[in-house]
Amino acid sequence: MTKLNYKCPALFSFYFAGMLVLMILCVMSFPADAQDAAAGKTLPEAENPIHITADSLITDPRNKTAEFVGHVLATQGHTTITSDRLKVYYREESQSESTSGMDVIVRIVAQGTVTMVLEDQIAHAEHAEYIADKRIVIFTGSNSRIVKGNDSISGHKITLYRDDGRIHVAGTRKEPVEAVFYSDENLLGVPEKKN
Image (cartoon, rainbow, N blue to C red; front, top):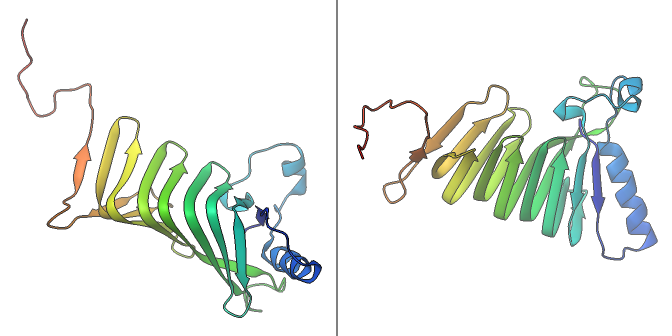
C-alpha cells in the first residue's frame, strides 16, 4: 500500500477538497516501524509515499481513478516519473486482505513524453504502465528507450521486471530492437587502430 500526496494549484470547493482528503487518507499506508522512519532510516521503496504534483487533478470515485494532468511529476523513494498525464487506478482492499479498509493502487498509467528515473536507469517512452501486483513497468511507443550510463536499449515495447531487474524488449519491422553497450574489453575481436 502506498501513501499518495499531491499538490494542485487549481482551487477546489470545500466539499470537493474534503472528499479528496478522504480519498487520500484511504490510500495512505504507514511504515511498520515508525521509530525507523523517525530516525531517518531508509524505507523500502514500497513503503515510501508517492508524491505527485500536476496542473490539475480529476478524481472519479465511482471508477476508482485519480488522473493528474499537465506537468506531472511523481516521486517515490529513488523513482521519479514525469509525463503529460498520469492516471492512478485503485481498488478497495477486501476483508481477507486486511481489516484496514484502505484502497490499494492496482496500476499507474503515464502518457505523453514519459521519463522515468529508476536509481541508475532512465527510461523514455510515449506511454508507461506500472502493474502493481506483478511489479512490472511496460514502456511503449516509438523509440522507447532505457539508458544506464553510456549503455542503452530501445524498441517499440520494453517490459521491466522490478523484482529481478530483467528487461524484455520487443521491436517491429520498422523499429527493431537496438542495443548499444560499451565495454573496456574487446569482446568482438575488432582490430585496434595503429598510429
